[in-house]
Picture 1 (cartoon, rainbow, N blue to C red):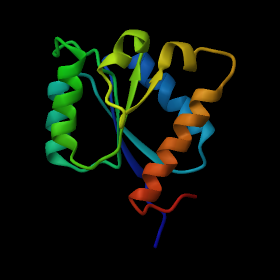
Picture 2: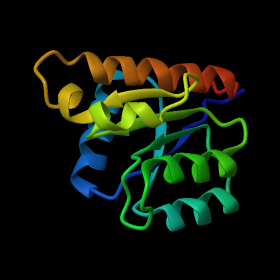
Picture 3: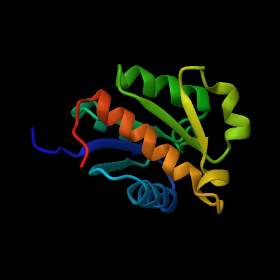
Length: 138
């Protein structure tokens, strides 16, 4: 089977944050990732209705969604069994909205710290999604 790109939908309204995360993940991982960004919940729903993704990275605070729990529930309704990872700049507040089966990372603490552990952890989670989707890594 030829190598395929892992298709990741990154739901993030801050373009700079989306680029930071994508760059960090690509540097930390050793596989081909095709990121697509949705800047609003409406845009994410439209993209999810049109095509399948192997993983969804979700910011809970979007301009067209009033409450983080609504963002999460709406997204989960659209993705079926697709793996979901929440990346939040307000994880201290948002973690109360996360069910136990949803992983979350604080992008402010993790991606802007000198430790560099979050990109590696995120790359690992993306690799797990690739394996679950039976996509060969490079």
